[in-house]
Image (cartoon, rainbow, N blue to C red):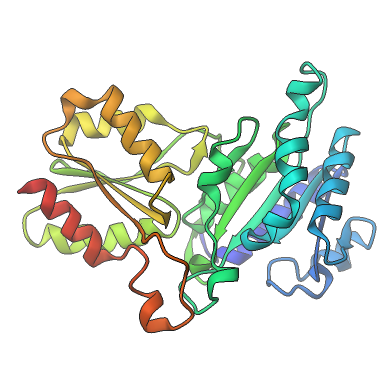
Length: 321
């Protein structure tokens, strides 16, 4: 297996899917200049009809993508999570509801690639991690890759899926290197990955928090604490069984989530385990999520907001007391 950078895994998935299916095309702001580094060679190979630069109008080009998906195209829209607010009417009122409103007669195979920039001084307007809000809306599939292989496989599955998919790409992982199989195909939704096995506590970690959980688990192992890490990969659909099975084994649950803690993915996972796995728990569930504040620009303050290995270790120790 080759070592591949996270952004190159995005590029590989796009190239391979565009070669496989002529109905796949990409669109977004400045994508012909490859501002975000993942689409550098696509214009040369596929031309202007399948690599579309758009105006600075998310409400407009999101709507165009949704419309083209209704007539048989498979658009991949590149954006930032912070810019998705401009297109909320198109995403929520149209993409999420249209199959239901048409009685199942319509399919909307549109993929939104939403980059989450945070932890690098992007300040409040460019540091949103909005996947919890979209989890609340039926009709959308929510994908949160944590490594290059999953990024490639889950993006492929999103492009092939017949429902609207939002792939939240963690900007802190863009330079991450990892093994990607030469024949990496689509990864099915709703199937979590057991990152490491353990017996004393379960950490469910989302997107970039997986790496923090791994570092915390490594350090805790030196103290004789065995931690199991579950990466859900997709939040909608969510692999509840994998999480519940792990908690049944360990008796303890910590959720590491880079999004704000109120009404978060962590809150939903905690609720599921409290309702369906209560008798497996030997200690209260712990949430390690972003603080409920706007993200400061100053790096020294911003670093205090997000989950990190130290916070995760503290939460694990709390469940063991």
